[in-house]
Every structure is written in structure tokens, then in C-alpha cells.
Length: 187
Image 1 (spheres, rainbow, N blue to C red):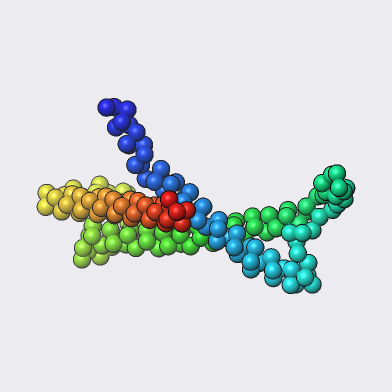
Image 2 (cartoon, one colour):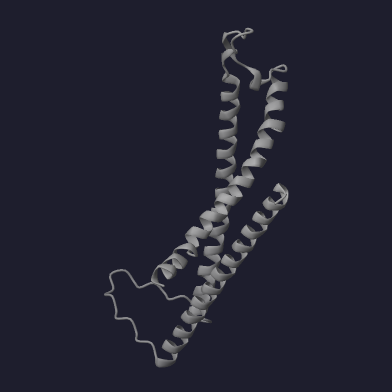
């Protein structure tokens, strides 16, 4: 029983679920980037370079004969792979930059909301005059302590509910993606 419990704790941790979602979305995203490189970027580059098709560019070391296959260095494929890598890196960078900026805004809004919840209707404390000795903080009254405990409990409960909702949403997305992949493969 202990092994099963440990496995459940491992398998359903947020990091493992996030990794699973990342792998599934990454595999789907690679198809989008492949199409972008092969059908949009490379034709534009080919158009800009007077019709040169990079994928067919090669240095023939030994031409094909009736008995032997052609031996060639396909540097055009390398060029296309480098462009593909750069596009994937750029797309990942822009996506992460967007996510981090949204997360930063959400964290700032949450901090502001938490500050308003902790001290409703109270102006911010005035800064202590320079050179003044640090005074002992005032002990909260039992009512203030109870109110603070209730706020802390509500904040923690809201965070837990949000995380559970996020996990449920991610699991639903994974299920839908896998179902779509199975339907596309005809399973």
C-alpha cells in the first residue's frame, strides 16, 4: 500500500502534470512549426533567393551509377534544420515571455488584493523618522488575530481551490488531446 501511495503522490504532483502537458503540447506544437517552416518560411526564402530550394541543395561526392547510389552532402537539409531550430526557439521564447509577463501581473494583483484584505480601510503605515529607535510592534487584539487567521485560511483555501481547478483543467486538456490523437490515428 505504501508504494502505491508514494506513486500517487509522485504521479499527481503539479510538476509531473505540468511536464506531461508540456510534452503533449510540445509534440502538437512541433507539427505547427514544421508546417510553418516547410510551407511558409522556406518558400519565402526560396522566393527571395530567386527560386533556390534549400532542401535539394547538396554537394555530390560520387554520382549515382547503375551499381552504386549517389553519395552527397545534403547541406540544404542542414540549413532548413537550423531555420527550424531558430523558429522553435523564437516561438518558445515569445511564449514563455508572454506567460511570465501575465504571471507577473497576476502575482502583483494578488499581492495588492492580499494587502487590501489584511488591512481593510486602514491607510498604509507612515515610515518611521530617520534615526528613531525601532519600536516594538503592537500586539494584535484577539479580534484582530482571529480576523487575520480567517483571512489567511480563506487565502490558503482559495489557492488550493485554484490549484485543484488548474489540475482538473490540465487533465481534461490532456484527455482531449490524447482522444483527438487516437481519433486521428483511427484507434
